[in-house]
Length: 353
Length: 269
Image 1 (spheres, rainbow over the protein chains, first blue to last red):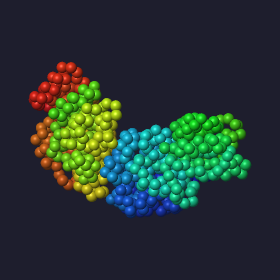
Image 2 (image 1 turned 180 degrees about the horizontal axis):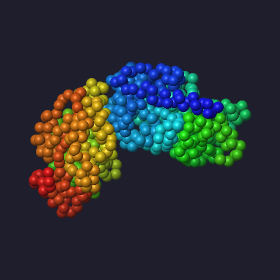
Image 3 (image 1 turned 45 degrees about the vertical axis):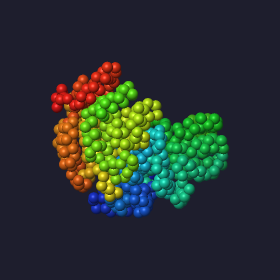
Image 4 (image 1 turned 135 degrees about the horizontal axis):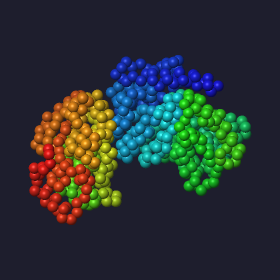
């Protein structure tokens, strides 16, 4: 099953990442079908489309890419607003700082690139030029985690939450699906802080049936209720947790699933409530367990004085294997089956693994 | 006057980036007293010319100018680097009125200035953006990313000035990391390049007057040949005075020397 899925993804992935990456100077064609995939099936890449809509009535919006306009789908914006789109070429650090300069004049730049380059290559530009200066720049960090599969560690971002959440005055938020991403982009218009928006590969399955109208940075979303365990997840792991919770429910285990979309500033009350009101807490993230969501939750739990059983699920502190994304999620127990299996072991053992 | 104030502030802090502030003194004065368009009573004026001090360590030479032209009360300078001061060794745009962008980490300023330049294009504004770079910071890769992009976008209202004082912290640039041929490098990145004696105010103003006023043309570079720590003979052209501190009679001697005005430099030019 996993191998078959992997083979299919192999072909799709190569097509998705690199087709359509032409800048506006070349002939622009909407990326509708690539290797048979409808554009509608890349839901989390609607940021460009959403921004193009918003820019009709908000002339502060500009979008920047570093030669990944197709891969990040901001090409949808470039086609509709060519004079407000800038392709900086393969020079991410310059792009981020250029955006900071633009923001200092009153514009609201949205910068799109792979999460690995955004957060690690441009870490200092984000801290010094955007966060320290309080510039309203939004980083659209796509292909986060290990969603680029066999592209390997150079293209993975399994450290970005850790790096970004230690930067003062920077909002760090993950999108669980396309609808939540739309909500994040819309909410960003009313916020002047810099924002790091962590996005998946673009084929994340649906979590929210419609665009959440009550989205607020820093306010977690409780998606299911249960007293035996709380799963606190972010971004791409929210859907697997919901599916795992459904499996566990059939076995009589009631699980509260919390979508902790904003990792900084984190929803402290929701974390403490999980410890007080449910029997155990499991964090689930597509990220190194060191420094990420699990670490953030652990910090709160320890200082809260509320005793609870606690486990972090994520990538152990190592560089991941080469493989297609689905195979990697299975291997590291970050798909629904893996999350459910880990939860069963955690609850059965009564102590942490 | 500004050289003296630089030394006074250094004494408050106990140390200061003398060399790079003194080499840029005439450039900063020429910009703020003759060239830049701004309103001290309205630091956020959207149509003002922008100035990015990419060599942020020269802020000690910029603060007294900003005070003198009216961005803030000169008496505030007495708090320089003290706990809670708005004035650090590197400038913070959120604290100091008149600072158009924070700096300190070398190699970022040209990107900032390019962003401000492209923003003017988006917003239909006609201001210019000036960026003062050190020569040591030209070893930073991001400078060349920005230089390439500025040439590509024909950012004609972007004026970069390199304070070519020949030294970075560890020694002469051509020994530590050679930057020459500077004019040919920028020309190859599609910039128009001019060269001027960075301590000759008249020559600097003449060069400013020659600048093209065409926003969709090659970006413009001025290489200003300067002398590190110009105006204080014991420090001129001496990398040991990149950062330093003067005490006792040495301090008084230096102020007297500055009062006497610029003398012919003892160093090579």
